Image (cartoon, rainbow, N blue to C red; front, top):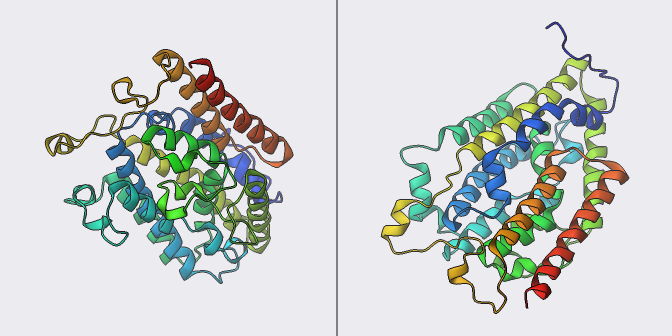
Length: 333
């Protein structure tokens, strides 16, 4: 243990989590799977497959949080109406597969994901969540809420536009303050409600939600029975990042052969042979733009930016993405 950093456990839990996960942030930034996903470069069927894996993760997290809703360290951030993502993921999967909401788990793509069992990385993740839910102190579940929900709230509108552009989801290209039909859009996973109403959250409102969540984490930290319990949450957050990296590592960059045999074509982002617009964009320029935009978003998600400084960066990057899209559209006409 020589050289191990000394952690001041008297600090607020939100601060400890930000500082304690820096190494995990760095590792996540180098994930090839994350770059492919956030670059909109996956075949559509593989993107849907990834959403299915996320559904299993959120289903496990949210079942565990429901079970321990009144637990002292989990109660301050428990708000399924605001945060729950499993229903939105199910709606998006159903929309993208063009099947009824209660039928997507019977789809061949889902059956292939589960046969003969869930992918190893996904099973490891779900098993860890189930083990925490069954433990005497389920407080480390808060670490998984922190990693997943704050990541989803950070830059959600920017990544929504990238995903919508990649897979032809026109509804996802609307402004940040529009819900666009919710479950009918295919991008409802990236849309949150306002903290105190049922309206769609703007970027400013998402900042308020994140502030509320961090305040709740700090209350949870004060309720920890000991410094060791607080440290266990911090250590679990780093583990949560690595479990998510395991999901990224399972992403396949090529479409499944079975889909080709069925005659189904996956939409590939900016495929020149399938474009239906009059504009002709240089492929290299488009690729460079997408890579830069996605890198900027990914840094926001995993970089641990907080407070006014982080919010200003989020707004600046969001505005840059808007302007860049407009410049590419008008400049190529």
